[in-house]
Image (cartoon, rainbow, N blue to C red; front, side):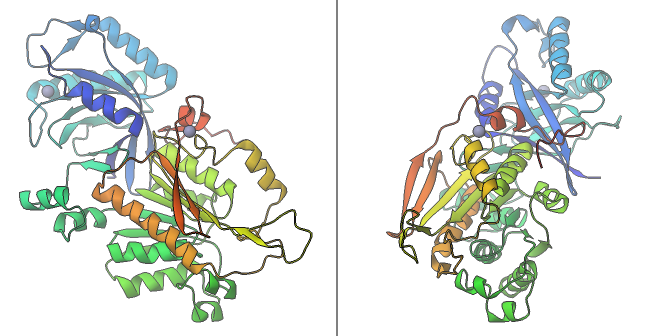
Length: 455
Ligand SMILES: [Zn+2]
Ligand SMILES: [Zn+2]
């Protein structure tokens, strides 16, 4: 059977935990609506929204648990049905170190979950109890009448991905991770080893990120690229050299070989495809973090959508050489080396919120499809390996920051200036009207055939 992982996007984590750990006259309860998805190795449950019950929803309680009115329950089920989402009940055992379901919790789950399933058979439903950095519960998956009690809970936060239950480790190892997150530590190694990172585009930036990730000991790297190496790559990265272009190796093959040389414990899975081809999308769904090193905005829009749909942090990098487009002379003078580095955390601003993607920009790109990687009208190759290296290293740092939990203020995008070698912070804010954040975030696999606009 597949592992089950529940994911809470950034916009819901704070509200959920704050409500659930609130000390009050009785156990506090939060309801959640969730979609789901199936990847090759895991079933994902994705929280779309929360419902905090008003005081009037509760009935006087005799036992340890809260009791709520039938009318409120009907209201919740109607909302779930309207949105075609599963219904989850959260509560906490405050102070419990390795939390377990109480007999009351089990009895109430046995009573309620089949009722939820009757109303919405195509979605999972569950009762979840949170403790101190631990989770327990019962989840009833679609097409099953037996509740599953083994699952993990992932909270996507501004500066880290937190997954409960935590890997087993000694108190000293936990302390070391908290105080010195980058110090050699068996716990950090385990966390890296359990992580799957997808790298899309294995040319100048991507090939260098793959080497960094192999050095870090990430468990699996999924490399997605349909192309073969040629001489032009040799100026963009030290990781595609004469031998790769001589044998016209697939970039995935070249990357696999390098990963093996660096760290034999890392699995490299090469996918010879382009986004949004089926095999690429299926592989992306499995990832814990996506790193995009693609040269066009359409692919970025697709990656952002996958990231939002399945709640996967998405690190985006890109670099261009800009020349003076108004110059009448040939070759046109180089004016700038702008680069981009942005980590889109599901539930925080997306690439559309940041106005890095706009309909107008996408349209302009469609007009000039097939544009070379470098914005040189003659399509000349250029010596950009070290510039790509700067962005690639920063992207690998982002992966490490997210896993090790290095805390800092993240709601910024970084604008790289290759001429001066500086990374400038650009403030980004979530747009309330953003369609991707509103309708796609945590929407999981479509229950019905998706409606695709255009091609
Ligand atoms: Zn309980
Ligand atoms: Zn957005």
